[in-house]
Image (cartoon, rainbow, N blue to C red; front, side, top):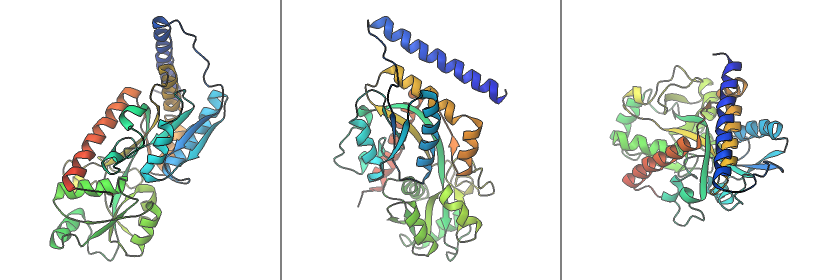
Length: 333
């Protein structure tokens, strides 16, 4: 199927879905369907400017601005592993004018670390669509005498708790990947959380920590320059940016997979017609060939879905990471 015909198929399916939701709403209630949107739309990015989440949010915002004929702006609200952004969306009016691009942390996993959250992710947020998927790379400082995943496991077993792995923070993708790795290999690593992936990488380059489950975009340049050593990727398949780097699963830990899927949500009780239109428009934007080229260059891969599929994914991720967090007794401190 050509790109043009693929786009037309997507348009047809989304158009039919949107029309079905509208007709269903009108059939069950004598209400008028207001136009949407009639004013600027805001996308809350749960990470700081310049990162992968910010890049995706701005890619979508630019396209939606053209499609909607209304300004779509990006509002970066980093902090508390995305909980600040999620709380902002959870308390917004249910009209579709405030979206969030979030991940497993602020969509549910944070509840295992934060005792008193000011929002309930399961009841206050409604899924729209997944957008991208990405993984981490297990990287090591060159001074560490390891070249494979099996070397790391052997060294960690010989020196329990002595090897330090830095991450972007408690509950972040790198932290959770490290937790799953320890659980499946029965080893003990020292977790050192930072306030972001950049400072964690700085200390890894300096040898202050020996390992990191770092994001692919953060890792690839330093790996290519020989400043750190890539041992394996955390995803089920090899990264298109690092095709010669094996997965952890094929490196001696069968079944290992720790990938991050970012997606869009709105506040609960947003009209189904609005959610359906947003899901379709965002999906078409992400799946454009030129969008895929931009995302892959920064270590991200397009991955869209229906609201229902995204909702099921969130539940599965919360259950998976909740079990690991409880098993290892991980806390925010």
